[in-house]
Length: 342
Ligand code: KG4
Ligand code: ZN
Image (cartoon, rainbow, N blue to C red):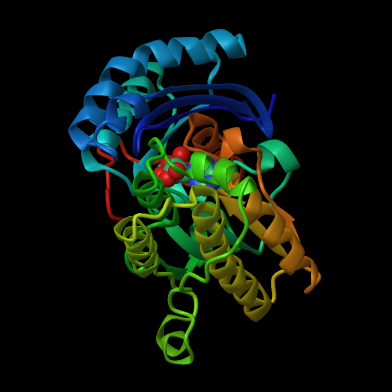
């Protein structure tokens, strides 16, 4: 058939993902995570992640094929995350993808990780709304992008802003640690916040009139993290208990408020009618509600894939691979580099 069957490989961080997609149909999404090996370090350790990818790659690949009920010979193209991400982690996925492309005689597509977080939405909601404003929030990135062509061709992906220090997910993880919650902290803060109320007015980074002049669509979360740390320390010094749920709710509100404020402002400024949210933090329940609420005030629609598709996986890479094939993009050469910083 002319609907492409694409296998996607993702190894930019701590998830080894192999996804198989036919058109907009998700056939398999096998993910092996090394998150537990990193937990005691409070963050992802690159060397540990690379070794884990090497061990998980072939079993994950086999699991994906089995679930999808396809053999490697059925696949029309191989897509792989070529960056951004941890260099050593990316290399494992890129090397595996090259080996497959070479041995199967199928085209290879190196794809951008951020664009994949956007493309994955079509597995749930159908054809992407282009142009749209993408808000990508995860442990490694917090970006606002104008997406008119998800394959990146013809300046189809224009970065409007990004974090100038910590990523949103990183802030969630650091504050969780401060509150004695396990890593990764985002889901724990989300859960704790539901039991608390927004009682503390934590700072909103880069929202002063002066900051907005230079950083209208940029984010900063390190000042917020420090403010939470100081607040908690002051409590402890006074010998008073820390109201974990209220701190979690107040911190989460500060993060979501700035993210949504700037995303809606960017969408309105760019004149787009859809906001697409992606990345691990898109699983946050408050972020989902607030984005819907404020976007609706401007007649803007919001698309958020289900949480399992928001975190890193191989299906997102395959989904973008399908667009590369369908839109006739040129395959990558077999000397495709991994670009950790692109
Ligand atoms: O996209 P992802 O799986 O990996 C990266 O590319 O970073 O995102 C992981 C991040 C972690 O920082 C995690 O704490 C955060 O997403 N996260 C959440 C929630 N679920 C995951 N943050 C806030 N609320 C959540 N419900
Ligand atoms: Zn990601």
